[in-house]
Image (cartoon, rainbow, N blue to C red):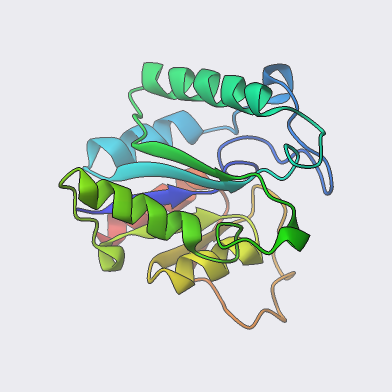
Length: 186
């Protein structure tokens, strides 16, 4: 099976700004074209996953309960748009905790693939993508053997990735443009 792994902030919803967090549903704003892009990918047979660092929980900026509420409402809105997600995986650890699930490490992607396999779904990384808006997203996707797409709808801006040691396979303005790349590659 083929899958799309997506970062959340800056890809699905508006990037809150450096060192800021989406702390409530009121502050969660879908980016333009997200619902139609994800619906199109889902209808083409891609499994959809969210893989996101959400250290605001361990920093005490917002609670796990608040994160769960935001996630439930996000998934409900996406389901109404016919974009069904297989699962959502968050790393809530701080960077200094050096866990295996915080991007740029690929721990959550590997966990998603492993758990899908436990349900009889074999995800083929070579047919799958990671769509993110930062270098750590691209590193995580690359480390997991996925094709990577950097979108400029969040943190990273064109030209800012000049000094990166790992480059994405593709660049896109936003998730809508990324979906077109994916479907064209298919």
